[in-house]
Image 1 (tube, helix red, strand yellow):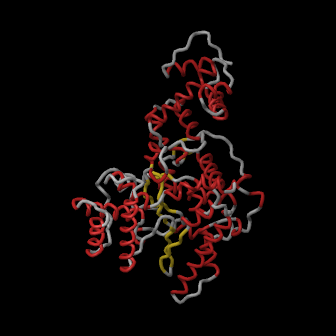
Image 2: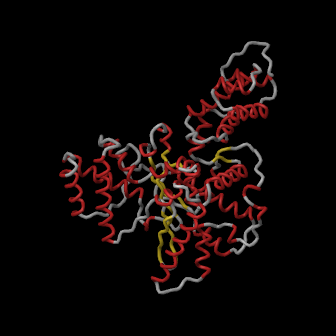
Length: 464
């Protein structure tokens, strides 16, 4: 495998394991004591889903699968597959993302044209252009875009961050309404109290599945029906009914906020959360269709608001979405997405929930920076925990590392030795030292801060 393919496998490989089937197998393993690697569990999931798919297709029941964008148009509803397992595998195999993106857009446009032809109409070129803009509002569609205005040329200055403010969150979530929120129980939790969504199955299919569980899988009679209902409900949460969604929404299989406790496990064995996110609202769709030109920063703001909304929506449903996942939602490279969200967070002085901030995955200092600064401003561990999406023990762990750097700084230890003593990277130590230079400039201030943290130091200690 090429170097590019190896890198893509590391970044995108976990996405291949975030599937409805793996979530169902995990449910069987945690609730019915089947092995996570059991061939039997896989066969049970396959049969139940296949039987329900066949029945719903025959009855005209339409569900939207994870990675599919649901749109309402004057000529009817349309479902566009943006994130597919096959295209992710192509990226892992080494195919360049721009060519994959172009193929996805071409398929979506073809489906859009077919929707018109089924209604006996011929789509106007502007209708097709409007869809392209909704999928990828990029330089090709905006006349006043210049090469010097690229995202990598926008200056990004370091600022103090804070939590997402309530009014900012309300603005992000305006005109969106996920089917359920993090305050609603769903089947990825350990509770047996599921949020009931109507299940479309008839007596015959139910009997077929229950008989299969007994005759072929050897499931005891007392739990056959319960197992079937659990799997069917979980499937319905990950694959919501089309008429339960708003235009511009997409279901996803995301990392669960509780995955932080099990990150040592393979992705397929970690908790997964069913989330529904709003990629584009009806108002945004119209805005893209009506305006012929955009100022570049105006376009940046549109991108950033959409991405920030998706992260916040997912978090409200107990899900966390990484930048590599957003890459397939917005058809942009993960580097570009990282730059856009970095620009947004610095512009608005906020922190957005993602695996990097909530579970400390990836090399990010933004949340550590926020936690230390908020503590220096006088906030308690519990207050910081609520405002930064972190568990109190994680907040306390960051503060203890900061205390250690402060002590070693007072003793005049070079940053290279600090990194060795604390088993941290030199660049990370340097960023903590910058926090010290910004907030605790005098030895007296450092001693007073450490004293408040319960650290007693001998007198006469001087900073380097």
